Amino acid sequence: MSAATSFKPSASPHPTACLALADGTLFYGYGFGAEGTEIAELCFNTAMTGYQEIMTDPSYAGQIVTFTFPHIGNTGVTPEDDETADPFASGMVVKWDPTDASNWRATEELTVWLKRRGRIGIGGLDTRRLTRAIRQQGAPHVALSYSEGGVFDIADLVEKARSFKGLEGLDLAKEVTCAQSYTWDEQRWVWPDGYSKTTKPGHKVVAIDFGAKRNILRCLASAGCDVTVLPATATAEEILAHAPEGVFLSNGPGDPAATGVYAVPMIQGILKADIPVFGICLGHQMLALALGAKTVKMSHGHHGANHPVKDKDTGKVEITSMNHGFAVDSQSLPKGVVETHISLFDGSNCGLRVDGKPVFSVQYHPEASPGPQDSYYLFERFVKAMEK
Image 1 (spheres, rainbow, N blue to C red):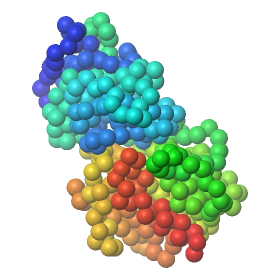
Image 2 (image 1 turned 90 degrees about the vertical axis):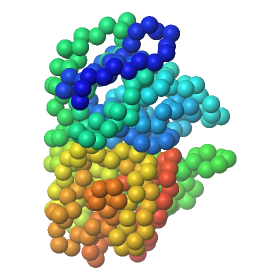
Image 3 (image 1 turned 30 degrees about the horizontal axis):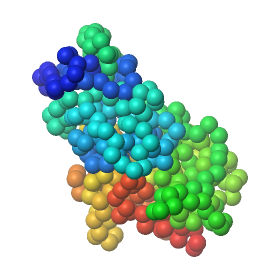
Image 4 (image 1 turned 90 degrees about the horizontal axis):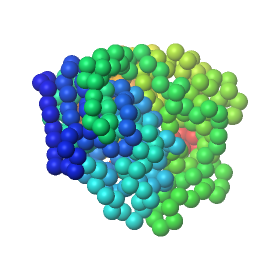
Protein backbone atom coordinates (compact mmCIF):
# COMPACT_ATOMS: atom_id res chain seq x y z
CA MET A 1 0.00 0.00 0.00
CA SER A 2 1.52 3.33 -0.95
CA ALA A 3 1.36 6.46 1.15
CA ALA A 4 -1.80 8.52 0.77
CA THR A 5 -2.85 12.02 1.67
CA SER A 6 -6.49 13.06 1.72
CA PHE A 7 -7.70 16.62 2.15
CA LYS A 8 -11.03 18.43 2.00
CA PRO A 9 -12.23 22.03 2.15
CA SER A 10 -12.11 23.18 5.77
CA ALA A 11 -11.67 26.24 7.96
CA SER A 12 -8.38 24.67 9.07
CA PRO A 13 -5.49 25.30 6.65
CA HIS A 14 -3.82 22.02 7.52
CA PRO A 15 -4.80 18.49 8.56
CA THR A 16 -5.37 17.98 12.28
CA ALA A 17 -5.41 14.18 12.41
CA CYS A 18 -3.25 11.35 11.12
CA LEU A 19 -3.87 7.63 10.70
CA ALA A 20 -0.55 5.76 10.59
CA LEU A 21 -0.43 2.11 9.52
CA ALA A 22 2.23 -0.33 10.65
CA ASP A 23 3.57 -0.59 7.09
CA GLY A 24 4.30 3.14 7.07
CA THR A 25 1.26 4.25 5.09
CA LEU A 26 -0.13 7.61 6.26
CA PHE A 27 -3.63 9.03 5.88
CA TYR A 28 -4.11 12.68 6.83
CA GLY A 29 -7.49 14.19 7.67
CA TYR A 30 -9.39 16.38 10.08
CA GLY A 31 -9.90 15.40 13.69
CA PHE A 32 -13.01 15.59 15.84
CA GLY A 33 -13.96 14.30 19.26
CA ALA A 34 -11.15 14.05 21.82
CA GLU A 35 -7.54 14.92 21.08
CA GLY A 36 -4.93 12.23 21.71
CA THR A 37 -3.54 9.02 20.23
CA GLU A 38 -5.03 5.52 20.08
CA ILE A 39 -3.37 2.27 18.98
CA ALA A 40 -5.60 -0.54 17.74
CA GLU A 41 -6.59 -2.90 14.94
CA LEU A 42 -8.40 -1.19 12.06
CA CYS A 43 -11.61 -2.73 10.70
CA PHE A 44 -14.45 -1.48 8.52
CA ASN A 45 -18.20 -1.61 9.04
CA THR A 46 -20.69 -1.47 6.16
CA ALA A 47 -23.84 -0.64 8.16
CA MET A 48 -25.85 2.35 6.93
CA THR A 49 -27.07 3.26 10.44
CA GLY A 50 -26.34 2.52 14.07
CA TYR A 51 -22.95 4.22 14.48
CA GLN A 52 -23.67 4.92 18.16
CA GLU A 53 -24.54 1.28 18.82
CA ILE A 54 -21.35 0.24 17.01
CA MET A 55 -19.14 2.56 19.03
CA THR A 56 -20.64 1.31 22.32
CA ASP A 57 -20.54 -2.38 21.39
CA PRO A 58 -17.97 -4.10 23.66
CA SER A 59 -17.10 -6.44 20.78
CA TYR A 60 -15.16 -3.53 19.23
CA ALA A 61 -12.72 -3.22 22.14
CA GLY A 62 -9.21 -2.91 20.75
CA GLN A 63 -10.45 -1.73 17.33
CA ILE A 64 -10.84 1.50 15.37
CA VAL A 65 -13.83 1.43 13.02
CA THR A 66 -13.83 2.71 9.43
CA PHE A 67 -17.42 3.51 8.44
CA THR A 68 -18.06 2.89 4.75
CA PHE A 69 -21.35 4.81 4.88
CA PRO A 70 -20.47 8.51 4.42
CA HIS A 71 -23.32 10.20 6.34
CA ILE A 72 -22.16 9.69 9.92
CA GLY A 73 -23.65 11.92 12.60
CA ASN A 74 -26.95 12.64 10.88
CA THR A 75 -29.08 11.09 13.66
CA GLY A 76 -27.01 12.54 16.49
CA VAL A 77 -26.83 10.50 19.68
CA THR A 78 -29.20 9.66 22.52
CA PRO A 79 -28.55 7.80 25.80
CA GLU A 80 -31.32 5.38 24.81
CA ASP A 81 -29.10 3.97 22.03
CA ASP A 82 -26.00 3.26 24.11
CA GLU A 83 -25.31 -0.49 24.17
CA THR A 84 -23.13 -0.04 27.26
CA ALA A 85 -22.28 2.81 29.62
CA ASP A 86 -19.14 3.80 27.67
CA PRO A 87 -17.82 3.44 24.12
CA PHE A 88 -15.45 0.51 23.65
CA ALA A 89 -14.32 1.17 20.08
CA SER A 90 -11.08 3.16 20.26
CA GLY A 91 -11.97 5.58 17.46
CA MET A 92 -13.77 6.16 14.18
CA VAL A 93 -12.71 6.88 10.60
CA VAL A 94 -15.18 8.60 8.25
CA LYS A 95 -15.21 10.07 4.74
CA TRP A 96 -16.83 13.39 5.58
CA ASP A 97 -17.08 15.50 8.71
CA PRO A 98 -19.95 14.25 10.90
CA THR A 99 -23.13 15.99 9.79
CA ASP A 100 -25.37 17.96 12.14
CA ALA A 101 -27.98 15.93 13.98
CA SER A 102 -31.41 15.85 12.31
CA ASN A 103 -33.53 13.46 14.35
CA TRP A 104 -36.25 14.05 16.93
CA ARG A 105 -34.66 11.57 19.34
CA ALA A 106 -31.22 13.21 19.32
CA THR A 107 -30.04 14.79 22.58
CA GLU A 108 -26.45 15.56 21.56
CA GLU A 109 -24.18 15.99 18.55
CA LEU A 110 -21.90 13.05 17.72
CA THR A 111 -18.73 15.19 17.86
CA VAL A 112 -19.63 16.52 21.33
CA TRP A 113 -20.47 13.01 22.54
CA LEU A 114 -17.14 11.64 21.28
CA LYS A 115 -15.17 14.40 22.98
CA ARG A 116 -17.01 13.90 26.25
CA ARG A 117 -16.44 10.15 26.04
CA GLY A 118 -12.73 10.50 25.17
CA ARG A 119 -12.88 8.96 21.71
CA ILE A 120 -11.03 10.13 18.58
CA GLY A 121 -12.50 10.63 15.13
CA ILE A 122 -10.85 11.44 11.81
CA GLY A 123 -12.69 12.69 8.71
CA GLY A 124 -11.73 13.58 5.16
CA LEU A 125 -10.25 10.17 4.31
CA ASP A 126 -10.79 8.07 1.22
CA THR A 127 -12.62 5.35 3.15
CA ARG A 128 -13.32 3.37 -0.02
CA ARG A 129 -9.60 3.04 -0.74
CA LEU A 130 -8.88 2.22 2.90
CA THR A 131 -11.59 -0.46 2.92
CA ARG A 132 -10.21 -2.07 -0.26
CA ALA A 133 -6.78 -2.22 1.36
CA ILE A 134 -8.21 -3.92 4.47
CA ARG A 135 -10.05 -6.45 2.30
CA GLN A 136 -6.96 -7.27 0.29
CA GLN A 137 -4.28 -7.22 2.98
CA GLY A 138 -6.13 -7.92 6.22
CA ALA A 139 -6.94 -5.74 9.23
CA PRO A 140 -3.85 -3.58 9.87
CA HIS A 141 -2.44 -2.35 13.16
CA VAL A 142 -2.69 1.44 13.32
CA ALA A 143 -2.09 4.54 15.40
CA LEU A 144 -4.70 7.30 15.19
CA SER A 145 -3.71 10.76 16.41
CA TYR A 146 -5.67 14.01 16.64
CA SER A 147 -4.00 17.31 17.49
CA GLU A 148 -5.53 20.76 16.85
CA GLY A 149 -2.03 22.02 16.19
CA GLY A 150 -1.60 19.52 13.37
CA VAL A 151 1.91 18.56 14.45
CA PHE A 152 2.69 14.80 14.47
CA ASP A 153 5.73 12.69 15.23
CA ILE A 154 5.24 10.38 12.26
CA ALA A 155 8.10 8.03 13.14
CA ASP A 156 6.66 7.60 16.64
CA LEU A 157 3.15 6.93 15.32
CA VAL A 158 4.38 4.27 12.90
CA GLU A 159 6.44 2.67 15.65
CA LYS A 160 3.40 2.65 17.95
CA ALA A 161 1.36 0.93 15.23
CA ARG A 162 4.09 -1.66 14.75
CA SER A 163 4.32 -2.30 18.49
CA PHE A 164 0.63 -3.20 18.78
CA LYS A 165 0.49 -6.94 19.47
CA GLY A 166 -2.90 -7.47 17.86
CA LEU A 167 -5.98 -9.33 19.09
CA GLU A 168 -4.67 -12.88 18.77
CA GLY A 169 -4.02 -14.33 22.22
CA LEU A 170 -5.74 -11.36 23.87
CA ASP A 171 -8.46 -11.93 26.47
CA LEU A 172 -10.58 -8.76 26.40
CA ALA A 173 -13.73 -10.24 27.93
CA LYS A 174 -12.29 -9.71 31.42
CA GLU A 175 -11.86 -6.01 30.63
CA VAL A 176 -15.41 -5.39 29.37
CA THR A 177 -17.50 -7.70 31.56
CA CYS A 178 -19.61 -6.49 34.48
CA ALA A 179 -17.94 -6.25 37.89
CA GLN A 180 -20.79 -7.99 39.69
CA SER A 181 -24.07 -9.73 38.95
CA TYR A 182 -27.31 -7.84 38.28
CA THR A 183 -30.85 -8.48 37.07
CA TRP A 184 -32.39 -7.15 33.85
CA ASP A 185 -36.08 -6.47 33.16
CA GLU A 186 -36.12 -3.83 30.38
CA GLN A 187 -37.71 -4.88 27.07
CA ARG A 188 -37.18 -3.76 23.47
CA TRP A 189 -38.03 -0.24 22.33
CA VAL A 190 -41.59 0.01 20.99
CA TRP A 191 -43.31 3.02 19.50
CA PRO A 192 -44.65 5.22 21.08
CA ASP A 193 -43.80 4.19 24.63
CA GLY A 194 -40.08 3.44 24.24
CA TYR A 195 -38.62 0.90 26.66
CA SER A 196 -40.96 -0.93 29.04
CA LYS A 197 -40.41 -3.30 31.95
CA THR A 198 -41.44 -6.94 32.19
CA THR A 199 -44.57 -7.32 34.31
CA LYS A 200 -44.72 -11.05 34.92
CA PRO A 201 -42.12 -13.66 35.91
CA GLY A 202 -40.56 -15.57 33.04
CA HIS A 203 -38.10 -18.37 32.49
CA LYS A 204 -35.05 -17.99 34.71
CA VAL A 205 -32.04 -17.31 32.48
CA VAL A 206 -28.46 -16.65 33.49
CA ALA A 207 -26.67 -14.54 30.88
CA ILE A 208 -22.86 -14.71 30.90
CA ASP A 209 -21.45 -11.28 30.13
CA PHE A 210 -18.45 -11.59 27.81
CA GLY A 211 -19.34 -8.07 26.59
CA ALA A 212 -23.14 -8.18 26.41
CA LYS A 213 -25.08 -5.47 24.57
CA ARG A 214 -28.14 -4.03 26.28
CA ASN A 215 -30.35 -4.84 23.30
CA ILE A 216 -29.51 -8.53 23.63
CA LEU A 217 -30.72 -8.47 27.23
CA ARG A 218 -33.82 -6.55 26.10
CA CYS A 219 -34.57 -9.24 23.53
CA LEU A 220 -34.30 -11.95 26.17
CA ALA A 221 -36.68 -10.00 28.44
CA SER A 222 -39.12 -9.39 25.56
CA ALA A 223 -39.10 -13.09 24.72
CA GLY A 224 -40.23 -13.90 28.27
CA CYS A 225 -37.02 -14.39 30.23
CA ASP A 226 -36.24 -13.42 33.82
CA VAL A 227 -32.60 -12.43 33.29
CA THR A 228 -29.71 -12.48 35.75
CA VAL A 229 -26.36 -11.34 34.34
CA LEU A 230 -23.11 -12.81 35.70
CA PRO A 231 -19.48 -11.83 34.94
CA ALA A 232 -17.45 -13.69 32.33
CA THR A 233 -15.37 -15.32 35.06
CA ALA A 234 -18.36 -16.97 36.78
CA THR A 235 -17.94 -20.69 37.41
CA ALA A 236 -20.43 -23.41 36.53
CA GLU A 237 -21.16 -23.85 40.23
CA GLU A 238 -21.95 -20.15 40.65
CA ILE A 239 -24.23 -20.21 37.61
CA LEU A 240 -26.11 -23.36 38.60
CA ALA A 241 -26.60 -21.95 42.09
CA HIS A 242 -29.16 -19.61 40.51
CA ALA A 243 -31.15 -22.67 39.35
CA PRO A 244 -31.48 -21.37 35.78
CA GLU A 245 -33.83 -22.90 33.23
CA GLY A 246 -31.41 -21.77 30.51
CA VAL A 247 -27.96 -20.21 30.09
CA PHE A 248 -27.13 -17.52 27.55
CA LEU A 249 -23.56 -16.89 26.31
CA SER A 250 -23.12 -13.31 25.11
CA ASN A 251 -21.06 -11.56 22.48
CA GLY A 252 -17.69 -10.02 23.32
CA PRO A 253 -14.24 -8.99 22.07
CA GLY A 254 -10.82 -10.58 21.79
CA ASP A 255 -9.47 -14.03 21.03
CA PRO A 256 -11.93 -16.81 21.99
CA ALA A 257 -9.05 -19.19 22.69
CA ALA A 258 -7.68 -16.78 25.31
CA THR A 259 -11.06 -16.26 26.98
CA GLY A 260 -11.65 -20.00 26.74
CA VAL A 261 -8.95 -20.70 29.32
CA TYR A 262 -11.53 -20.03 32.05
CA ALA A 263 -14.79 -19.95 30.03
CA VAL A 264 -14.53 -23.40 28.42
CA PRO A 265 -14.46 -25.34 31.73
CA MET A 266 -17.46 -23.30 32.87
CA ILE A 267 -19.44 -24.07 29.70
CA GLN A 268 -18.54 -27.76 29.89
CA GLY A 269 -19.91 -27.81 33.43
CA ILE A 270 -23.14 -26.21 32.24
CA LEU A 271 -23.49 -28.73 29.40
CA LYS A 272 -23.36 -31.57 31.93
CA ALA A 273 -26.39 -30.06 33.68
CA ASP A 274 -28.44 -30.74 30.51
CA ILE A 275 -30.24 -27.38 30.36
CA PRO A 276 -30.80 -25.22 27.26
CA VAL A 277 -27.80 -23.16 26.16
CA PHE A 278 -27.89 -20.35 23.58
CA GLY A 279 -24.78 -18.46 22.44
CA ILE A 280 -24.08 -15.63 20.00
CA CYS A 281 -20.85 -14.20 18.54
CA LEU A 282 -18.06 -14.81 21.12
CA GLY A 283 -20.54 -17.01 23.00
CA HIS A 284 -20.91 -19.10 19.84
CA GLN A 285 -17.14 -19.45 19.59
CA MET A 286 -16.85 -20.30 23.31
CA LEU A 287 -19.49 -23.01 22.96
CA ALA A 288 -17.68 -24.47 19.93
CA LEU A 289 -14.41 -24.62 21.88
CA ALA A 290 -16.17 -26.29 24.81
CA LEU A 291 -17.53 -28.93 22.42
CA GLY A 292 -14.06 -29.67 21.04
CA ALA A 293 -13.88 -27.47 17.94
CA LYS A 294 -11.28 -24.82 17.06
CA THR A 295 -11.39 -21.13 16.19
CA VAL A 296 -9.28 -19.16 13.69
CA LYS A 297 -8.39 -15.48 13.15
CA MET A 298 -10.04 -14.05 10.04
CA SER A 299 -8.27 -11.79 7.56
CA HIS A 300 -10.54 -8.78 8.05
CA GLY A 301 -13.56 -10.23 9.82
CA HIS A 302 -17.26 -9.57 9.28
CA HIS A 303 -18.60 -6.18 10.39
CA GLY A 304 -21.91 -4.83 9.13
CA ALA A 305 -25.70 -5.12 9.07
CA ASN A 306 -26.12 -6.65 5.63
CA HIS A 307 -24.51 -10.09 5.87
CA PRO A 308 -26.50 -12.92 4.21
CA VAL A 309 -26.55 -16.17 6.17
CA LYS A 310 -28.15 -19.43 5.04
CA ASP A 311 -29.96 -21.71 7.46
CA LYS A 312 -28.88 -25.15 6.24
CA ASP A 313 -31.86 -26.86 7.88
CA THR A 314 -34.56 -24.77 6.18
CA GLY A 315 -32.73 -23.24 3.20
CA LYS A 316 -33.88 -19.80 4.35
CA VAL A 317 -31.51 -16.85 3.86
CA GLU A 318 -31.41 -14.22 6.62
CA ILE A 319 -29.84 -10.76 6.42
CA THR A 320 -27.88 -10.40 9.63
CA SER A 321 -25.78 -8.05 11.72
CA MET A 322 -22.21 -9.23 12.33
CA ASN A 323 -19.17 -8.12 14.25
CA HIS A 324 -16.40 -10.67 14.61
CA GLY A 325 -12.75 -11.09 13.69
CA PHE A 326 -12.52 -14.77 14.66
CA ALA A 327 -14.55 -17.71 13.36
CA VAL A 328 -15.28 -21.32 14.23
CA ASP A 329 -13.42 -23.77 11.98
CA SER A 330 -16.29 -25.85 10.59
CA GLN A 331 -13.88 -28.65 9.67
CA SER A 332 -13.06 -29.09 13.36
CA LEU A 333 -16.64 -29.63 14.57
CA PRO A 334 -16.75 -33.03 16.33
CA LYS A 335 -19.26 -35.79 15.73
CA GLY A 336 -22.67 -34.91 17.13
CA VAL A 337 -22.18 -31.16 16.55
CA VAL A 338 -23.99 -29.97 13.42
CA GLU A 339 -23.26 -26.85 11.39
CA THR A 340 -26.60 -25.05 11.04
CA HIS A 341 -25.75 -21.74 9.34
CA ILE A 342 -23.13 -20.53 6.86
CA SER A 343 -22.12 -17.12 5.51
CA LEU A 344 -23.05 -16.60 1.87
CA PHE A 345 -20.16 -14.15 1.56
CA ASP A 346 -17.35 -16.62 2.25
CA GLY A 347 -18.89 -19.92 3.43
CA SER A 348 -17.59 -19.51 6.98
CA ASN A 349 -19.42 -21.11 9.89
CA CYS A 350 -22.27 -19.07 11.34
CA GLY A 351 -24.13 -21.52 13.59
CA LEU A 352 -24.18 -24.91 15.29
CA ARG A 353 -26.35 -27.21 17.36
CA VAL A 354 -25.76 -30.35 19.40
CA ASP A 355 -27.67 -33.43 18.30
CA GLY A 356 -30.30 -34.50 20.82
CA LYS A 357 -29.69 -31.55 23.17
CA PRO A 358 -31.24 -28.04 23.50
CA VAL A 359 -27.86 -26.44 22.79
CA PHE A 360 -27.31 -24.08 19.85
CA SER A 361 -25.51 -20.88 18.87
CA VAL A 362 -24.98 -18.45 16.00
CA GLN A 363 -22.06 -16.28 14.96
CA TYR A 364 -24.16 -13.24 14.09
CA HIS A 365 -26.25 -10.87 16.25
CA PRO A 366 -29.95 -11.83 16.19
CA GLU A 367 -30.86 -8.80 18.32
CA ALA A 368 -29.50 -6.59 15.48
CA SER A 369 -30.46 -3.22 16.87
CA PRO A 370 -31.14 -1.04 14.92
CA GLY A 371 -31.64 -3.85 12.40
CA PRO A 372 -32.24 -6.12 10.54
CA GLN A 373 -34.72 -8.19 12.53
CA ASP A 374 -34.69 -11.42 10.46
CA SER A 375 -33.21 -13.54 13.26
CA TYR A 376 -35.22 -12.55 16.34
CA TYR A 377 -36.88 -15.98 16.18
CA LEU A 378 -33.78 -17.46 17.79
CA PHE A 379 -34.70 -15.90 21.13
CA GLU A 380 -38.15 -17.50 20.81
CA ARG A 381 -36.47 -20.83 19.96
CA PHE A 382 -34.45 -20.53 23.18
CA VAL A 383 -37.64 -19.94 25.20
CA LYS A 384 -39.39 -22.90 23.57
CA ALA A 385 -36.42 -25.09 24.47
CA MET A 386 -36.86 -24.07 28.11
CA GLU A 387 -40.59 -24.73 27.96
CA LYS A 388 -39.92 -28.32 26.91
